[in-house]
Length: 389
Image 1: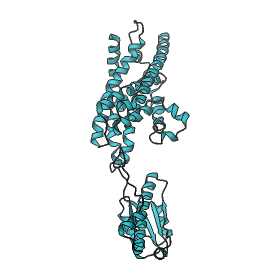
Image 2: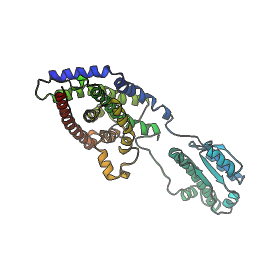
Image 3: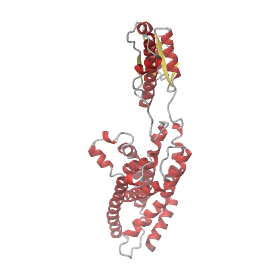
């Protein structure tokens, strides 16, 4: 225990004497999560600009324009005279969609025939495309139902009968766990989990790379005259990292979530209980990786490069069922995969600890696996250092 506490205290000194590690452990963790969500503060994309080419110029076509402009997701920003002008505005990114109302549109409807309106939307920006397509579909659906009700009323049907026939199955949707449908509420919570992992890995990797690069004795600090000296070395360093990042977890889930008013259904203490094996798994993984880096810059480049693939493999940005099975199985070797899944269930979906036991036990298994791996790699590292000494 004495050796463990010495290593623990020494690792604190290593951290707080390295400005690069402090920037990662505190600068990135404290300030990045504050500024990262600001661009998504509006949560829902609204008022997407459209161009409408009205070749009909009738009362019904003007009604279409008014109804489209009234929808919260889209906005009629331009009314060019023809498709050539509309396409030019589209290529200049002045509008993100084009609606073409053909000639004789009103006449076709009044004859009782099926009319058509041509729409173009920019699928290169997938979120914009979804909002434009949704706004147009809802508006034209409402217009079509209104036309149908007027036709049936003219045939002698009661207004209630006409409405029931025009809209036989009204859709009533209730978005769960993200009531506003906000983009920030969707993207930021899992990214926070990833930030905990990546900053911890990068910081530990930098400490290991620096020590190997400059042959710093603190990296191999332990009671060399004691048997089993690897255990206090690993646990002492892990204790220093864990004590810092459990406070970061309280800051993330207890402060930032309330600051930005993200959906919260779970209890903070339960979430911290779930975070316990997550942090341990990440710490031991970081210590195992750190023993492989000989230069601190290599640790930064490798671990930063891995952040985006890890995010996509976690199964939240792209559905897990659509990821190749063998690849998603490999992804479960990364703590953030189970960490993000369990956290979202606990904190946003209101699940109980019993519901996430699979993820929880997996994280404990990863913590044990990476602890053993760190033990093996550090034992080899210390033997090399002793031979060199």
